[in-house]
Every structure is written in C-alpha cells, then in structure tokens.
Image (tube, rainbow, N blue to C red; front, top):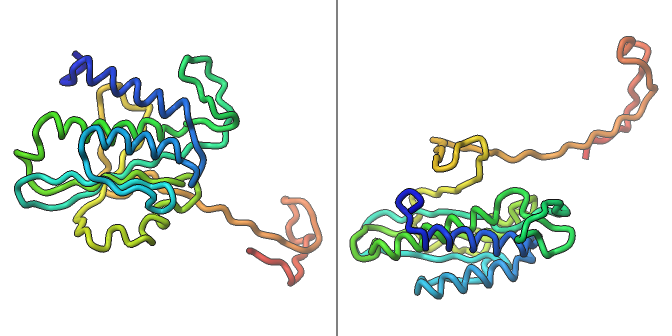
Length: 214
C-alpha cells in the first residue's frame, strides 16, 4: 500500500505519468497526449469533449445529489528542451521534454477521476467537477483559446482550481495557496537611442527622442 492507494492504483499512476513523459508535445500539438487522455476517460465511462481550443479536453463528473460545480485544470504541453536524463521513460520526441511537470499534472487529474469512480462518488457525492486538460500553457494562451470556444458559458462553475508540482514539499504532502499562486511573467523590450557612457557618470550620457518600447 502507498498511503491509502492500493499498489495497483499507485503503479497505474506511475505507468501513466511515465507514458506522458515519453511523448512530450508542444503547444497546440498535444494530439497524442489528448488521445491518451480520452482513452482513459472512455475507460472510466466519463463524458468528455475533445478538440476544445484545438487540442484541449474537458470532462465532467456529476454526482447524484445537487451541489456546486467546481473546476480542476491540468496543463499538458511540454517545453522545447532536449532531455538528458538516462531513464527507461526518457522523452522519445527529439527536442521536447516534460521539464515543468505537466505530465504529472495530467496524471493527477486522471487519478482524481479514477478515485472518484472507484469510491462511488457519483452515487454518494454532491455537485460536479469539470476537469479541464489545457493545451499551450507555456506561453501559448491555451486557457484563453479554450474559453473563447464558450465551453464554460453553460457551466456555472463556482470555483476553479489548478495543481502544480512543487519539489520543495516532501513526498506525500500537498500545499494549498488560498489565493493566486505561480503567477506568470511578461517580457518587456526597450530600445534607447543616444550617447553611451559609464554608469558612474550618467550625466555625461544623453538620451535622444526616437526610442521606442514595443
């Protein structure tokens, strides 16, 4: 046993994560990844919609009792990096690697779905959970692409959650941020035209109009 998971469940999670790790795909090209997600969902008899925002997948698990609808999002794209690890499940897609843990994020979401199914949450729970498998998180605006399809217009989601790998936490522990966490950053380019100089003597330098900051 691994915590409260059976060995079968634990090994299934490991094998699934390693499968995703072997086939990393860049933004909006997560076709193999999406197909695998759909295959797993079909095995659990969970309704889903594929091709949302190009390659995204949205699945919904509803319980028998009324209650709030929440969403759980997992990103699934990889980074343009060459993997140098020497492991049996090393990336088979040259030039790409799951270096940001999205293979784990996707596996966690599918693991939650399996746990709900095996613990009869549909029969005994209340409300519903919308599972969002998002493409193009790495700078590709995948969340916006999915929202632009109107996929949430008819879904009264009251709260949305997302998971992220955090190596600083010990195995078996999770952390919860009460508000926004893991904010992204933008890049700003500034072009200055003028006379150069030394930082110790800025008054000897001169700035000329005509510079731009795109």
